[in-house]
Amino acid sequence: MATAASASASPAALRAKTPAPGAHPSPKSSLAFPWPSPGASASASTAASGRLHASLHLGGVRGVGTANGTGLHVLPPDVKPLAVPKMAGGAGAQKSILLYHCEEMRDLAQQVAARNDDIELCTISWRKFPDGFPDLFIPNAQNIRGRHVAFLASFSSPGVIFEQISIIYNLPKLFIASFTLILPFFPTGTSERMEDEGDVATAFTLARSLSHIPISRGGPTSLVIFDIHALQERFYFGDAILPCFESGIPLLKSRLQELPDSDNIAIAFPDDGAWKRFYKQLQHFPMIICNKVREGDQRIVRIKEGDARGRHVVIVDDLVQSGGTLIECQKVLAAHGAAKVSAYVTHGIFPNKSWEKFKPDNGEGPEHALSHFWITDSCPLTVEAVKDRRPFEILSLADSIASALQI
Image 1 (tube, rainbow, N blue to C red):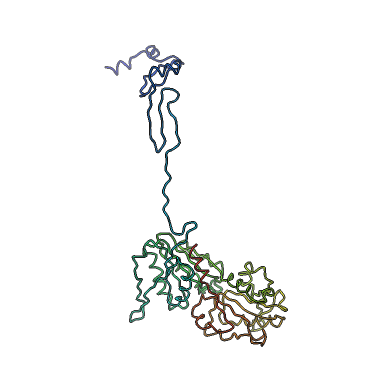
Image 2 (tube, rainbow, N blue to C red):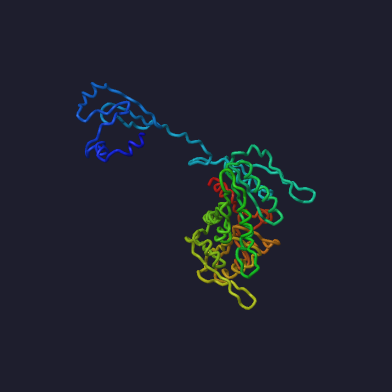
């Protein structure tokens, strides 16, 4: 058998079949276009085989086989650029926005839409069932597919949050391109820490609730908030939402430039917290820092540093509730020689009509009244109560919101 014969082959026979070192038998070429022999001239090769060509298309690269050289010439790729689809919001383009709003924010939403032709105002039917629970409806829901959508919210009281959260959770599920929530005032921002075991930081609770807004086709929800009480609250939000913190301070700076005594302005902060929050935006003004000290059962405001003499001093803070600290700060500044005292807060909350404590200066002097009290329209119920009432003046967030929607 062949197997037996192979097995019985002598070592000498095997050595005879093994080529000597350096001897390489020429294998029979299997190429369609054989390579020329080392000693053959180019002209002989051309004469022998002619000029043979083979083209190979591989993703736009052409290989050409020839009888001389390697037979492969690489030409520039014949690749056409990919068509890039036009997308709203690209570089140099304005996004077309559908803007929804709660009932309280109707006036501000109309102002925002008036600022930009690319913002279209949309409506929601805010109805209630006989038992008081929301009966909500979004008209033409199918027509907003593929569109950029925003919602302007006002969480002015716990009673209105649930119905707005219901809309906020529903809009991203309507196959929209992106979703932006504008919440000018984050209402639980002052409850951001625990001092005793058992304290509930409701700022964290609300942040986590907003962090569970469903993701739209364009990705996580963008959340726009103005002058949140503490910047560290950014970290209360989860990864499924993108908080964007804006400020109303640029509105104040623009307004101060319009005053006849704009070159005599000084900025006062009622406490260290307000100074840390805003001093970088106002550092070109002279600054006065106040603080609160406890004497017995009373908390007294004193000037920590700065000089108020002869100045029009503007007290700056993120929000005001009862206004007690602000009034004490006003009195201290007047006692230290301020010529005028005004105030600015981004969020005028004023529970229980506490805005009534603030009177306009009709010549009585800064000890008893304010020259100006500027607030934004982040809290629409307050705006309704104090509009056209001195010393209050509303600085609208409409332009800032319209700009934020294009981010």
